[in-house]
Length: 517
Ligand code: FES
Image (tube, rainbow, N blue to C red; front, side, top):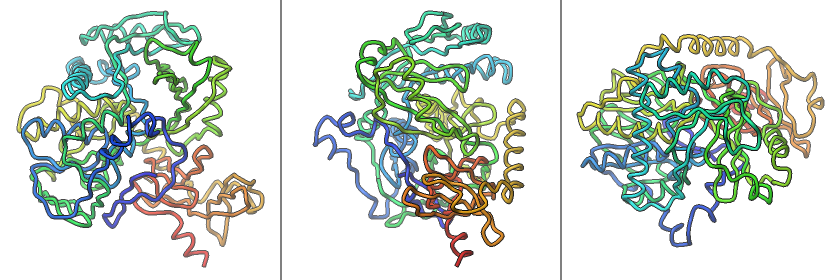
């Protein structure tokens, strides 16, 4: 299940997600029944006043609340569901300043000064994790490890990244030696990076915070009042840390972000024990490549990445399993899950004031698949802004920055939106309902209207309108998740039409069913 925001201002969880990550498995998250009970937090039942309200209790929200509290502010953290139950529960939880091959790109697109801010902020974020975990004595399987970006074909781009990182003060090592089950052309290694169990960390940190879970927000007001179903929170500042910002205007973040999906399998077995104990975390520089990290006796293999709603792989989990089978023939898949990330045109998050018109509202979003350190950077910057202090890294993350360097990506995004708006009435995949195979989906014309149909294995049909309620793009079927996904900004709906992910704020079955009556 997933937290979504609706156009009437309410927040709900209705859509179905397939597959649960390793992190949510009780046996890895809680040491005992008592720890599980302690992780249950109350629901807001009354009116309260605080200095800051933080909305969204994922990694960013919890860290922002923690850092503000450390700065002497009273803070209330509120979430419709539970701590870490959104994007955080599906991360691969790598704490790294090595964000693919970003530094060469940042220096040439933004200049050395901005690139340094990005590098220094993310390096500092790793140290902050270490400091908090040690000071608070949080048992979260934290391990210092090197991080590698490798290539199978282009040594030059790795060499350039090594040079760029060194210019920015990062100790980057060029190597061909890895513990991967295949040889690489080259790799760049950053030492002293880290990995952990993200939910154990959040549970540990949230113990000292005021958190209200299962609390539905019905309105966020400019004057600092957040209205929930059973109480109001009056604050001087509000922070929106909800993965995708749910206030469309002002801010207009949906014009400047799309979402990418990726899939993960956790493998175990004799081959993993013998051959897959890696010395660090690995990621292929090629977007179609794979990522690797260990957790206890498991290997987490990620990949099959694509823009949400576009180029959906026919079977991402089978693809990952087949790849794993080449390297570890005696390994078996024990958990499968997927995640979705907000991608910005210039690959830099938006952290700071939400908009010029809302000076007391702040935002942290667009983490470009690097949520752990980006969440910590958000906490450092937003706590300084609210405290009225200057933050030395703030400029590069400024949410209303000009996008010259990202203009190509912005144009690409605009083209995807235009094509998908125009194609809503095209692409009818089947002439008749019965042409759709059991367990598959397609689009047919019914009463002159295009509808999406999923036929389950018992021959029950589920109908949806394929026009996304956000801005009207045409939804695409995702066979891996049995969902209808929007290529424009990443809204998702289960096969019944229930909304799973924003920015759309309503389901897609109502209009269709009304029309069919
Ligand atoms: Fe924006 Fe679908 S998510 S049009």
